[in-house]
Image 1 (cartoon, one colour):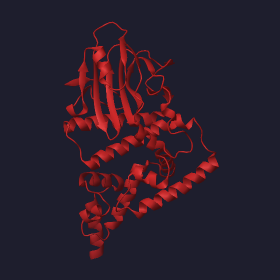
Image 2 (tube, one colour):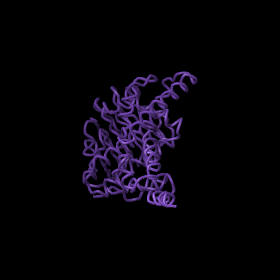
Image 3 (cartoon, rainbow, N blue to C red):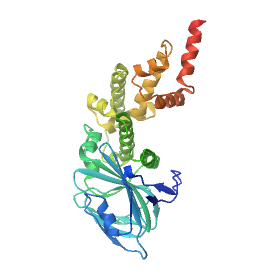
Image 4 (cartoon, rainbow, N blue to C red):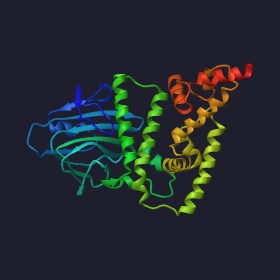
Amino acid sequence: MQVSFPPIEVLEAPSDYPAPPGAGGMLFDDIDEQAASLGGWNQRYIQLSAGVFRGGVQRLLVGGIGLFIEDLQQTVHQTGMVRPDVVALGIPLHFSGESRFCGQTGSAAELHVFSGANGFEFHSPKRHVMQGFEIDRPVFDAMFAADDTVPATAIGLSAGLHTVEQAAADQLRALGVVLFKWAAHRSGASGSVVEGRRAHEALVEKLVTVLDEPLRALGQPSRPAQHLQAQTLELRARDRVLAQLDQPPTVAELCHALGVSRRTLQNCIQATWGMGPLAWINTLRLNAVRSRLKTATSVTEAATEFCFWHFGHFSADYRALFGEPPSATLGRHRCRLAS
């Protein structure tokens, strides 16, 4: 079964996007059935434009985060109220026509927050493809726990539109599409624990980045105090990661050990290193492997010492960072030792 989506220039997505069984792909010609397909949203759809209704929904679960892509091919008036144990967000993938969301004029550039005690009202455009995220409340709260700059639940208090940094929004869109493609290629097969963790960590990182701008408006400490806090936090984080490169912590574990939120750590590492914490930890590990290859007897020995078990991913990441495969590094140092 297939759901047909238009080309999305920024994502270079195919025109016919597969709806894999493992991602819960469904097509609808009944508007009420589509409204009911997102369980826990208590939705009602009313068709406003003339013509046969066509729609589709794809679903995918990554850790405590549900992803969906909803395609609406008529103008629809939507009302609903998301259950309180999730925070529901949306980023449009395709947008053609006029839109109003909770009384605000909408566009493809804004983050749509559906959660809130008063529910949401959405007058969708004539053609609309929305990429949505249903974040379990404990997962969402953990992203911002111990964050002194904003209440942990602020973004989920009321439905509405929020301005976001567009590069971050594009990266979130792209990652969501990649995850659906990955599920399609696996035809619904369950992934390994490592692959699942990598996907979850990457998704959380992109979500935190997108949410940063809306949350930043709620208050920040002064710049000098913020800079000093970031320096101290970066040093603590670096010391902890370098001390356990053979058993690298997840970003969530590192945040817990440091007593900071995911957002706080992510902003700190981004400002200092120019990358997110997930990529940063991986970069530190790859550099450790590169140093170890000077004395190791094999690439496998050096890679497994720093907990790289998926050798395809490891080799690709190593080559991307250092411009050569790990075997070339090993061979060069063996030649130097022999000479």
